[in-house]
Amino acid sequence: MKQWIFFLFSLVLCLPVLANKEDNRLYLKPKTIVGSGEVRLSDFTNWKGNWNPVVFLNPKEPIVLEPEAIAERITSLYAKEWGTSLSFSVMGKEGILLPKTALLTKKELEESLWKDLDSASKHSLGEMGERFRISSEKESFPIISGTSAVWRYSGRSLHAGKRLFPLDFYFAGKLVHSESVPFLIEEKKQAYFTKREIPSKTILSDEDVEVRTFFSADSLREYTDENPVGKTALNGFLPDTAIEKKQVRTLHTIERGQEVELVYTVGNLLLKIKTRALASGNRGEEIPLLNLASQKTIRARVQNEGVCLLEER
Image (tube, rainbow, N blue to C red; front, side, top):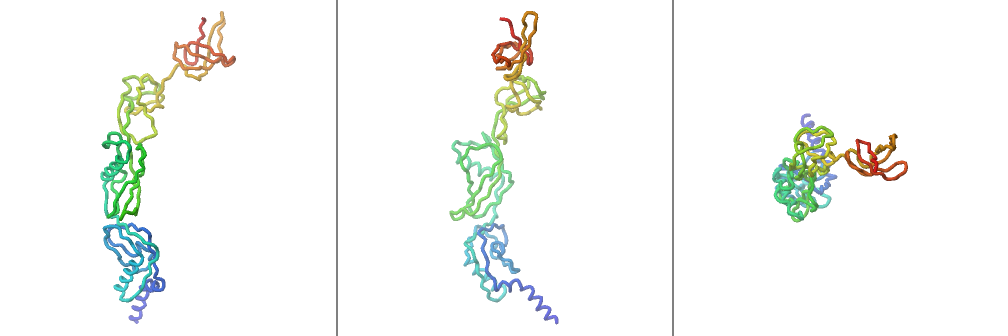
């Protein structure tokens, strides 16, 4: 009775292998990325059986997988392990095994890319930190052993921001794999910074601002590199803040396009008419106004906000 139980148990274990005797065709995967250690049959084919032999061990460089050679190898492994002959058929085109067993550090990634960017640029980028600096967003990056890694760069001008740079891997003169590595690019800029807290609507003075250089990854913001002294802060600022162009402006008592009340006297009468400013002006300056009723142009002197005075001539 025990012998029959042992026989049935053994038969159950062998069912996946025996089932594949009638359908022992395998299909190669076109490309398989592996790490160090054992590479089993199911790693680079569609094999699903319980018997899953180690076909390669610790590959140090890419291995080209030819269907006929793989068929002979696994047929031999099967015969060696099971003591019986079983012919395997490997279908598909040539495949390749790519071992990721080497590692580039963050610094190596940055230095390698910078060298390629500098050589590909129409104008020399100089030393890192002169105009630009780059930093890898990966602390390390696994690469394929036994290949040549080449950065793919289009030669376009460098600009600040986050960007993916493709890294191509070549083996025996052929491109076998490509991956993108994320980098942060910072550009050196010059702008005016606040030296202290600035309330909204403050007219800036020399004591409020100073020019500084800094690195920024933001390519969308336009910082003011022209002296903003005399301009008005449209919003409040905290200390040590870079000033954007849109945040300061030269304000006038009356702005161009603004509706203005024109005041003038005729004898003992005080008359007021609605006009529109055709130019900006400060208190005491004479500006052209458009009479909204007659559509004629009148010149008057700015008196207060929204008010001009027509003087007798």
